[in-house]
Amino acid sequence: MYYQERLIFSEILVSRLKSETGRLFIQTHNFPDPDAVAAAFGLKELLETQGIHSEIIYDGELQRDALIRMIAQLNIPIYHWKQYELTDNDGIVIVDGCKGNSNVEDLVGREIAVIDHHKSLTTEDVELTDIRPDYGSSSTMICEYYQELGVMPSRAAASALQIGLARDTDLYTRGMTEKDLRALSFLYPFSDKDLVNSILRNNIQLSDLEYYKKLLENLMVYKGLAVCFLPEGCPQNLMGILGDFILSLQEIHFVGLFANNSGNISISFRNNWNDKDASGIMKTFTSGRGRGGGHREMAGGILESDTPPEPQKWFETLKAMIY
Ligand SMILES: [Mn+2]
Image 1 (cartoon, rainbow, N blue to C red):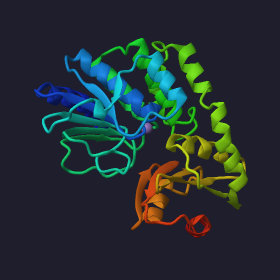
Image 2: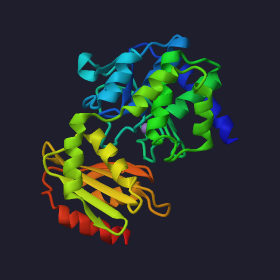
Image 3: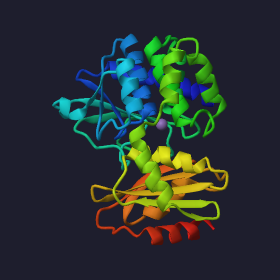
């Protein structure tokens, strides 16, 4: 029954989008990561096979060299939304994020559908929603659409989706399910393994080491909890990478990173305790002074600019929430 319902979504989406007369945009979450870009690209190519044309847009910036290499080497046509004159008549499909989330810019246009694997509430004014928090990546969901519609992915799309899946599951170790495994085996014969492996294995660069240094110098640790504030700021996607690095320490099970990014405080949580939920902790932590959400294993958020940096207090609050 569950599978049947899911089978229908991609078909409903296609027939709904076919009835659109205006332009169609696929919007990733802000500061997109490989999974968001891959899911958008996979969906764009899939829709193309159904006679539906779309453009991929994002807000924020493309931050990591590995992501930029993926986009360049796979020829992924993704542009900042400011490249287009968006109008109220444009249709938007949001992937890897939900309308109303702090990391999804509310652009001009009509949100027709949301496709996401984050645990989040989407607003009722979106017509079609496919939200599966039990999936390791949005790329996995797009893979299932290919299978449901009987379409073979191009080499570029399969490679992108494989990178998205691998990255979001932290190389198949985080939130990985049998559905993700099935997606991987579906993609594997189609993808460019050398390219995929090269991008996956070269995820950081020399210029990142300055942040690693600051992180190690300022890390506060209490039992399995590690907290760090980067007062000079840090690109959001690098915060996730730094959090994963600290979480890979045997003794650490929860990481809270904070960075002063143009006035606001960006937050990134990583968790590998089974009985704790990073998303719930983030919601409580930011309640009344910011926003945030995510999954059990990882969450992101912001504290509004009127919140002064109080790293010691954040550390104490997290200690109290966790222990
Ligand atoms: Mn994702």
